[in-house]
Length: 238
Image (cartoon, rainbow, N blue to C red; front, side, top):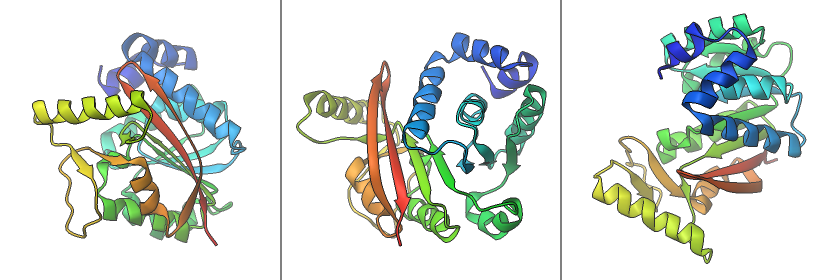
């Protein structure tokens, strides 16, 4: 079901929103709940937050349950318009902005005029960026003095002694090969890297990308029927 049908035609209350997702994309309720619990467990409720990439269900839950003062950036102007209208009907003070994060830094002072951004959220977007872009995201958050970042990802893999996670990795690799998915497995940093669509990183490799600007202080993961989600907390250095 497309975003417009999901958010515009049938959603006037939070109950409507939950019902639409439970019928059409039930796994998103699990993910939103896990993210909310992770934010709470790390003592990050009631923060001024900036999220890259929109998801009305996730945004609504962390706004209501975790009390986040939330600004969401997305490059899809139509989706931003739809979600702003839906958030208004739901009575949620979520600010959706049509903006490229790499150009947002120039306007962040005016956007957060009442106080600096305290929490960055990257939920299911890390696989959209090559290594240099992802490193620049951490650098921008650092220059904005964002103290904490939560990264929520289905694209990280584990090569370790855990047999379940190792078998998951083999399955993902073989599937991407047999179906000719344009999936890249990041092994070594390369300034010329260009990824076509989504790609997977080893979790330690991703942490290393951030290491100049942030320390990974906490991480957790859970399995669900079609994959595994990793949740990581990064704390600013210095």
